[in-house]
Amino acid sequence: METIAAVAYQAGKPLSIETVQLAEPRAGECLIEIKATGVCHTDEFTLSGADPEGLFPAILGHEGAGIVREVGAGVTSLQPGDHVIPLYTPECRQCEYCLSGKTNLCQAIRETQGRGVMPDGSSRFSIDGEKIHHYMGTSTFSNFTVVPEIALAKIRKDAPFDKVCYIGCGVTTGIGAVINTAKVQPGDNVIVFGLGGIGLNVIQGARMVGANMIVGVDTNPAKKEMAEKFGMTHFVNPSEVEGDLVPYLVDLTKGGADHSFECIGNVDVMRDALECCHKGWGESTIIGVAGAGQEINTRPFQLVTGRVWRGSAFGGAKGRTDVPKIVDWYMDGKINIDDLITHTMPLKDINNAFDLMHAGESIRSVVLF
Ligand code: NAD
Ligand code: AHE
Ligand code: ZN
Image 1 (spheres, rainbow, N blue to C red):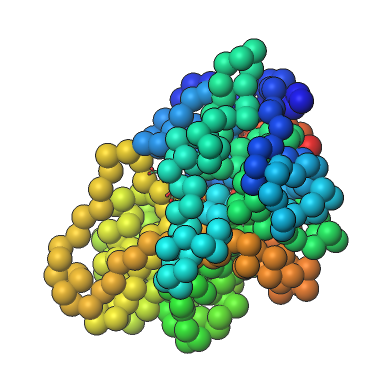
Image 2 (image 1 turned 90 degrees about the horizontal axis):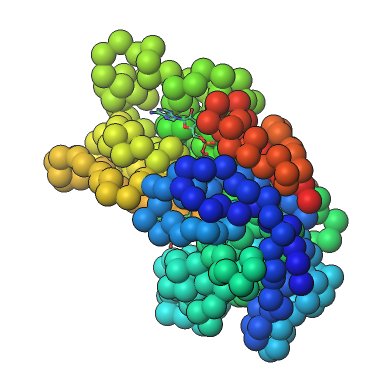
C-alpha cells in the first residue's frame, strides 16, 4: 500500500513529506493507522545527526497512537480495530530482561530496532524501491506504519488519540522516572533540570507522590508558569544565580536534593544534577539523551560520599502492562496531559514542530493525521 510520511533524508535538514510504499505486516507484526503523534526532543536529537544510531533516510517519530488495521500471521493479542500506542521499549514477556523483574529494557528486538529494520532484518518502507529505515521500531511520522505485536500497548477505545499519544513517550518517561526508577517518597525534596516535555511530567509525578520542595531549573524563564501549574514550588534560572549553581541549590534545599532529574541531555548539567544531591543519600536520575562522543564526569568522591547516579529509559515502564494504566489515569483525571500539548498541526507542517521546539515556544507539538 501507499502511505504519506515525513521522511528524514539527511541530518540537519527539514523533513520531507512523501508518498511512501509500505509492505504488508509479516508474521508477528501489525499494520497501524497512526492518528496522532507527538514530537519529542529525541526526534530532534536524531534528526540533528548527534545520535550514534541515527540512520538516513528514515521515518522518525516514536510518540504515537492509532488503530490496528491488519495483523500478520501468528498475532494473537491484537485484532483489527484495536486502539494502540506503539512502544519503542517493547515487552515480549519472554526474554531474560522481561523475566528478570529488574528492568523494563526488553531486548527481544533491540538489535534490529537499532539498525532501523523489522525483527526479520528488512524494512517495510520504501520509495521507488529504495529502502527507508524504521526508527525506534515505531516510525510514527507516517500515516500508516508496521510495528511488532510485542511493541504495541492495547488501550481503551474512548481515549482521545490526540492526547494519549504523548503517553507513548513523554508522559510515561517523566512520571515513570519518578515512580518506577527513582521511587521518590512523600516529603522528598526534588530538583528537576529542564522544564520541557519530559521535565514537566517529572514535576507532575513528583507532585503525585507527595514531594515536598519541587525545584525547577531552566534557562528559559517562559517555562516557569507552566511548571508552577504542574507543581513546581521554586524556580531557578541558572543565568540569574550569582556564583555557582550547585551550592545555590544545596543551600536552597537545606543540604541537597533527595532526588534530582536531568531532562535536557547536557552532560555538564548532568554533573550539576548529581552534585546538588544530598550527601549520604541523594540520588540523581539521568533522563536526557546526550550526543555521540559525549561523556559524564564527576569526582568519584561524590559517589563515595553517598550520592547515587542512575538512568531511566521510558520511565522504567513495561509498556504493554503499564501504558494502558496510564491511559486510565488520564481518563480518570489523575494526570494532566491537555495543558502540555501547546501546539497541534497537520503532517505537512511537521517542521514547524521542530522550529517551535528550537525557539522554546512549545512544550509538546502533536501532529494530527
Ligand atoms: P524539551 O526541548 O521539551 O525540553 C528541554 C528543556 O531544557 C527546555 O525547557 C530548555 O529550555 C531546557 N534547557 C536547555 N538547556 C538548559 C540548561 N543548560 N540548563 C537548564 N535548562 C536547559 O525536551 P524534552 O522533549 O523534554 O526532552 C528532554 C530530554 O529527554 C532530551 O534529551 C530527550 O532526548 C530526552 N528523553 C529521554 C527519554 C528517556 O527515556 N530517557 C525519553 C524522552 C526524552
Ligand atoms: N540512540 C541513542 C540512545 C537514545 C536513547 O537513550 N533512547 C532512550 C529513549 S529516548 C525517547 O525519547 C532509550 O529508550 N534508551 C534505551 C535504549 O535501549 O535505547 C544512542 O545514544 O545510541
Ligand atoms: Zn521521546
